[in-house]
Image 1: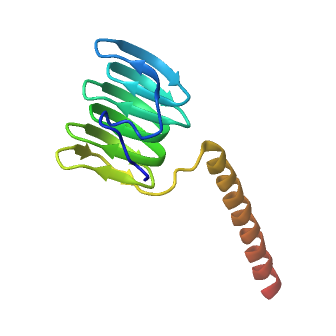
Image 2 (image 1 turned 180 degrees about the horizontal axis):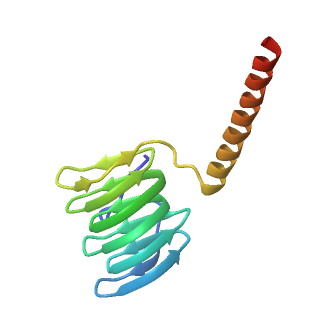
Image 3 (image 1 turned 60 degrees about the horizontal axis):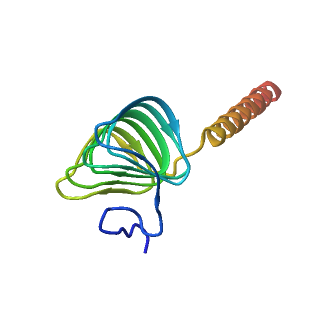
Length: 151
């Protein structure tokens, strides 16, 4: 079952690979593989192709780009999640979210903007911009030639 969790709120079939415990603080850029649980304070950037859990005691101010995000603590920042974002009470997100699936349980708080569409990678965005630019320039050239030949 997609989104199924055990009693600790960890997605079934996943073990926590890294942990930042209550009472700890970290500032900077973080990348990880597997499942990461954050119960301390973090300020900076978090990037991963895997899952991040912000526990009830977690306080995060960050730009986040992950596959799946589960929030039970406080999060302020910009979030891109390729698969889903879940907010469980007493979780609170203040900021913008881009994800195809957003789950907000009763008692959780979300204050911000949300774009519910598949998150494109930076590479996909660049390719899309280049294609659009090329198509626009090609169309513009055709239009000018048509105008010129019609006069």
